[in-house]
Length: 390
Image 1 (cartoon, rainbow, N blue to C red):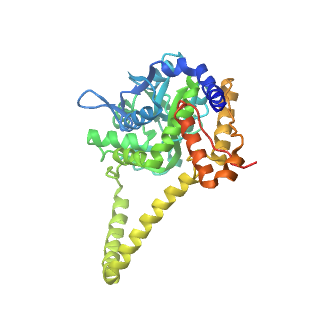
Image 2: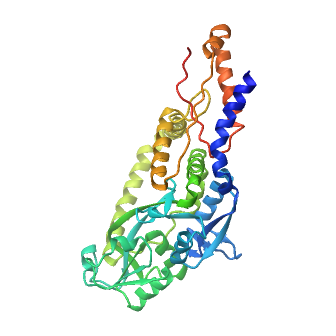
Image 3: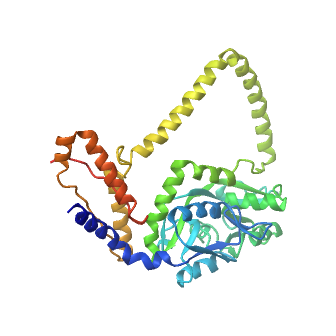
């Protein structure tokens, strides 16, 4: 009788996956812009490299998908392939409402700032207000198109890539360029011209970025989200991010800014000397404080994981279940596809507790959970509701 019930349960769990098995088994095509360092680029060994590639390889491994990279010259070509159904995934791209018309996005994997840049010799440009009637350059299909409008300047020039954009600024073809700060600063450093181009004004916008999936492959979304969450919990995400976004970027300052910074350096030096003497006899206390902070950080990570999982079974709890269902409902509305929720109930569980005690009852729950886990594919999100005895 028990075997019959288990077979029925496993059938109900596997049935929704049959609908998606064809899509999950095919080789997915993943878009890679060839010159978008540090996110994407071709390294000296003629291999695809970058932050997005290293992170996506880890995510894809956990999601157990079959894929191949397609190198494109620019975003125009890459997004066209997605729209035409010739590609399925972009490992990292800005999340926007416009792109959501034909893409679904994972949870954010990073954020960058949109900033304005000028020639270091353009002393008449100091703040965002000074861009009126100036010639502004940006890259086609870059998120800057949303924030640099004709109301700000009637002379907007668009270019295919950031190299052409920087050349236009240096040649005087444009007066100002709009671009992600990470990309431009790295490109300037590679070209050894960090002293010729500087940023100015306030940040235009903070852009969240994530994995973009063709709406035709929306069923991959929970696989990627689960993999990203796992990488954030186990520390792999932080390791990859720190590797590619270190703090050793060159930052150029104006003459007035350098004078002010020099003054701050002198004051800071004097304060450091004061603090060294003040805390010299408290070294042991400082070390103890450092150990406590590390312990608090570790406990915080544990609590974050416990807040979405059941302590006994390790399954996602009701709070996480609500989040997942709301997310799947939104995707279902946009894609007009169904999704399935299978609920499992263990009969006569109270009798097990009454006759054998709660320790045996807990062991039954753990073993029952392991049986289900070992017999489902990763697309299924296994949740643990509130356990009651009747």
